[in-house]
Length: 368
Image (cartoon, rainbow, N blue to C red; front, side):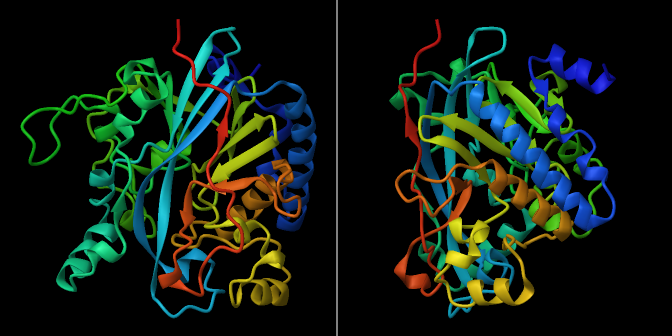
């Protein structure tokens, strides 16, 4: 047993052996084949392990996003900005210790996101143009969602994001020193939860590359207590019907949520902006299907950073290989973006060809 495996099992999560070594396969064409094959093998085993108890999704906020990034520059667009909708999931499942666990996925705090350099500059521009209301809309505060589901914020075991772009982790997990301009340290939104974060994503805050800095909140991890973090490597299973797959490329530590439900397997990440991103051959967004076909590509990237576009491509194939066809519309795979291109007429012609909407399975239960 490796040190990484032993550490993961002590934390209550299990490494996924099917993916051991696939990200080191060379040359790159062989790596893609290895990743696809490993995902297909794991999908078969994962589907037999059981389902989550419940999943509920809630829209948090709508935010502007450059159209040229959303579909890798393939789309034909009139407006330079589209709107993306941030979505939060509440997932309950049986842990490997037999106890009920609750995970909150993507509880974005809009005030923190606004401090990322890209959005701080965009906000100033929109304010000067008096156009902010056209792009920004607030639906729910993440710390006020749970009472409506019969839970308190103290009931949460885990918090996680597919990556930490535009997240001020201090506002979510608390800090032991004040944020600039504030008089006291922040208390955590979910007092008993630990942040599940990939080791490589955490490492990005230690030394930021110029290609990364615009999308991360400066000092967004400062003062977050180490005991509030649950750091993992590679691909891991959290419990029955819930896994986090390492899907690098968009960021070094990007990981995707995988859930087994009564309708089969769902995958969520921000590697793509719409169902079109994973199945461009079905897209009606002008340019997307045509450009993907011209280059012989089966996925279209969310391309605001391109830390490693080949890795991101491989990761999206990994996600496709895991996802089940939708029983409501079998030509579409069950992949739901954590930040999804809005279906708003004003951003025509960039509107998703298909949207799964939210997820709603089972009944959220109050832990004993």
